[in-house]
Each structure stands twice: as structure tokens, then as C-alpha cells.
Length: 574
Image (cartoon, rainbow, N blue to C red; front, side, top):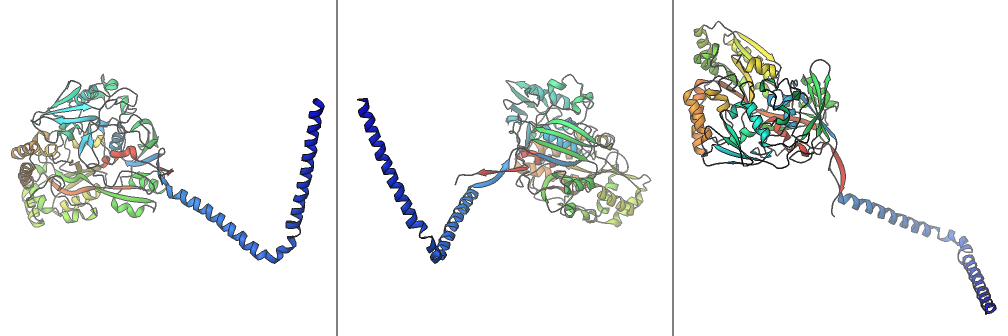
């Protein structure tokens, strides 16, 4: 059996071997006949071969090009996460505590690091921020605020109603004075059923705008007296609630220039920022900012004027956006030479506003304490016409022996405006002392609070909705208030209160029209211009949308969590 199987296998093997030799011989013969023997014929068809080769090569190249073409058609560059944004600001940083922010640098840092109960949205209207809802009862005096769930400080601790109650208590303290204090005067805050109730002494139709104040962490500061907050370590290493948290600060030289490093806050209520970090580089002069912007060491700045556009290189673009803010020459109606109404009226006629505004470029003219975008006034009272002869005669008759003290800060156009005003007043026969100082806490404490001036050239925020209480109501003519003119007129104050409580727009307009008549007649201030934000930024950077309506300059950060500096390729659905 075994022998039979073996013989059969050998037979099959020999058969397969013969078949293989036969096929090999046929293949060799085929190659010899159809390839080797025909090589000599190539010279007769070499042109045809070349044409076919080029055609095949062209087809291959077109196929590759088409592949790349289709890839590009569904691949786009989109903004990616990561990167660092560096903003140049002017002004020293004396404190990182947001309630004391006074310089441009401090205000920028406050907005980046601290959230508020309410804040302007993209349209410029005030809406909830840390709050999930803000409601008011029928009387207009009881406002209920509920916080969002899951809010956290940068140290991981929850943001609670206790933090809000503590912050309001601090802002209402007699031991400190902040720009937020006047809006909360007489307001009582209680906690009921997990919500906060703000009870006002009188109806206030626009109280939600007063809720735009930064919240302080009570778990860090509860035991610190209000008077000692400025000097507390929190002012240098704060716990934050905004889009970015504090990382470190670096002094540059000994002049007060600093670099503040911030990290993104993943717990930010508005969503985790695209940027990994945000750097605020504080400078003391515009020339240094121009140099830094042109050499690329900073990404953007809001500290330059439109006239500086010719000084930046081609990689920088300028965005101009009108703000709800105005610059005025405030007359001290309570102290010094200008407590005399006749002298104020003389200055109304004697100051050449056209000459004063000449260097302002495209800045909108502002004649009144209200903006046309805030409320419709059917008929504005007429302003006195320019009459220097009348002004000189009135000033000569008054026999003034004291100098007029003009005060302002080293901000934008302010020094040039002050110099021009000084010159004009001297031409009217007045002696003038001019003081131009660094903006900051010292200016606030030594000039603003004691009203240490006769004329103050200064910018004030006018808000999304008209409310003149803080700037012209007689109750605010004190150190802790913002009535920078020390203006006191009983009828005007009553009109302000009536307007701020009026829900009906036509009634509110009528009240403000009457107030404007008193304002022009009493001359507590002269309007100069509405502020434009000129924002200089690199071309390949995503910042705030140009469609945003900004109330203040720092409101540009309303969508800072979407700002970006880096682009990445992304595929889209064909």
C-alpha cells in the first residue's frame, strides 16, 4: 500500500516538472520573439512612445493636482485654542482689587479678572452675567437677583450669595470711596429663598446697570476691615472670577512699569477662553507703546489716538468704535472763583469751543450731558453764542485776584485741551494755574475727592441708559460722590429723580428736557467731545466684533473668551 502511494506521487511530480519546463520554454520563446527581437524596431516608433509617455505623465500630474484641489476645497483655516495675547496699557497699577480700579491699566485688569452680577451684552444693553436672572416688581423698588449654578472662584471655592452681600457691604462703607458706591446708596440687600433682593429707597428704572460691579471673595476678605482693603495682600495676588486668573507680576525698571501675567480660567461662566494666557503690559508713555506695538512685543492697545495711525506699521489695523462716554470741563460751582455764576456764564461765552476741539479729529462733538443714542430729546436748549468781548467785560468787572486752577490727567487729548483752555482764559484776562498729573489713586484722593480744582477736564461714563443722578444730583456733591461740579439745584435734582423713575420714555424725555434748561442756565460744565475708542491690533488676530456696541472702553472684553491669536486647518463637510 505504501509502495503504491509512493509511485503515484513520483508520477505526479514528474508530470508537474515536465509541465513547468514546457511553460518556461514557451515564456522564454515569447519574450525572445515579442520583446528582444523587436527592440530594434523601437527607433521606428520612438515618437509614438514619447507621446504616450507624456500623456501618461500628464494624466498622473492632473490626478495629483485634482487631489490637492479637492483637499483645499473642504479644508479651511479656523481659529484654534492656545496662544498669548499681550495688551499695552497706560497707567500704574497700585492695586489689583477691582473696586479701587482707577487707571486704564487697573480697569483693564479688573475687567479681565473679575466678573459682575450684570454686564453689557453685544448690543450694549445690560443683562445678567454672574446672575442667571434679574427681575423687578411693579413698584420698581424691589429687584431680585439669582446667581448661576456652579459658579467658582479661581481657587475652586464656590461663588455664593454671601460674596455678593459682603461686596455690597464694602461698597456702602463710609471708610472707602469707589466709583460704585453712589449707585448703591440707600439700597438694602437681603437673601430670601436662595435669591438676593435689592430694595431701593425709590423706584429706579435702570437699576440693573448699577449691578455692574465686581464681586469680592468673602472667604478671603471677610475679616479684613474695609479701610484696610487697599493694603491687603489681595491687592497684589487676587483670587478671581473672570475669564482670566492672576498668575504673576513683573516690575520693569523702577519707574512703575509692570507686566501682569494672567492664565485662562477654565471655570469662567462664559466658557473657557480660547487663549491660554493674557498679558497686560503697563507703560507710562505713548511713545513706548508705539515702539512695542511696531516691534511686535505687544499684540494690541487702546491707548493711542486716531492721529497716531500714521505712526504704526502696515501689520497693524485701527478699529474705531464710539463709546457711551464724554469729556467735559467741569466747573467747581461750590468752591473758589467759579462759585460765582456770573463768571461761569462769562466762560460759557468766552471759551472758543471750535478752537478747543480743533485737535480732536473725528471725535464726535458733545454739547450736553446726554447722548442722542441714549434718549430722544425733541428740542435741546440753545447754548450761548461765542462772545469774547462780553466775557472780558464780565471778568474785568468781577475784579478776580485769584488764579483759576485747571486740573487734568496725562490721558489722550487731555493735556492739549488743558493747555488750549489755559491760553484762552489768559486771553480773557484771568490768571491760570495748570496741573497735569498721572491718572490713578493719588489723583482720585488728592484732586477728585477734595474737589481741588476750579476746572476739571475729565471723562465720565454716560452709560447705556441716561441717568444723571451720579454727576449732577445735589446729594452727590460730596467727596464720596461723582458730582464733579459740586452742582446743587433743588429743581434740577427733582427732575433727575423724576426722570430716573419714569418708565414711560416720553415722560422721561420731558423731564430731561427741563433739566437741560437748568444745566445750560447754571453752567456747571461745558461739553467737549464724545469719546471714540481707537483700538490698534495686529491684522491676523481675532478680538471683539466690530458689531458690538461698547458702553465703556473695557467693554471690548465682553467676548474676550472668544479672542484668538492662532489659526489651525480644519476640514469641513463637502
